[in-house]
Length: 305
Ligand code: PSU
Ligand code: MN
Image 1 (cartoon, rainbow, N blue to C red):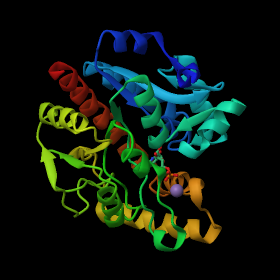
Image 2 (image 1 turned 135 degrees about the horizontal axis):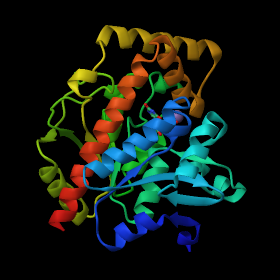
Image 3 (image 1 turned 90 degrees about the horizontal axis):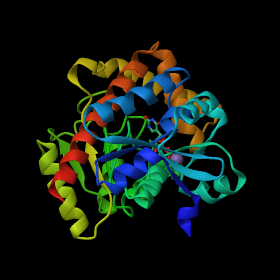
Image 4 (image 1 turned 60 degrees about the vertical axis):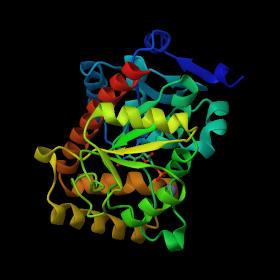
């Protein structure tokens, strides 16, 4: 039933049948997370990194009334050019967008949903959505967390940036039973920074150990796993500098009354502009690094099963 709305590319289909490692990639980062044309070059380079590390990339998006897993170059370009004019599809938007045929980037939540439907277990992104600062007033908690607690897919990210309330994000992940695993770190990374100062209960040093943990998680019939992979040292930003941009961007959002699904894209755009592209460069570096680790985990996961 549901699969009639699923369009899996030939390459991804072949990989699934041959039990080859596959890495799902999200597309809100393409439509709403970065400006054109950097979003297009990032989308291409991240696919290349997955290939270079032995896995097949499956970029996920909504196009022409279908859930795509694996995009042609033409479709990737359509999506990147559409940018903010495309929709941002979270779980609540899926049926409406599939029925009206709008073009949409998929968030971590919907990318997980579609990946699972296609049979893809490992997924790389930049940062996840979480509990926003001021959530006690606004109740702004990303549907990404709910999806992690329901859908058995592993998401490799660089932690959460401090546009979110990191302490509350970790608390809500815990409440929802989502394991947060540090990749060679005991400190939850803060996106542009290698450390947030919040310690993690579990960490593993190798993709093989993570693959073993994932297998167990799913033998237990449990759901999503968040794998936290710090930005490479050489790409890390200065804590004071990035914090300055983030707090200014949050103030600006409050002043302009930006909320709900517009909030994250608004903050990112402001931070990119204030840092004159420095934060965009760091963002691209950490996404590529997550794709590399995700591909290695996907390879190790297939080797053991
Ligand atoms: N954080 C980023 N870049 C992004 C996003 C988050 O640094 O592009 C996107 C991801 O797709 C994530 C979504 O799943 O924003 C979360 O949006 P919301 O908080 O509205 O659920
Ligand atoms: Mn939100």
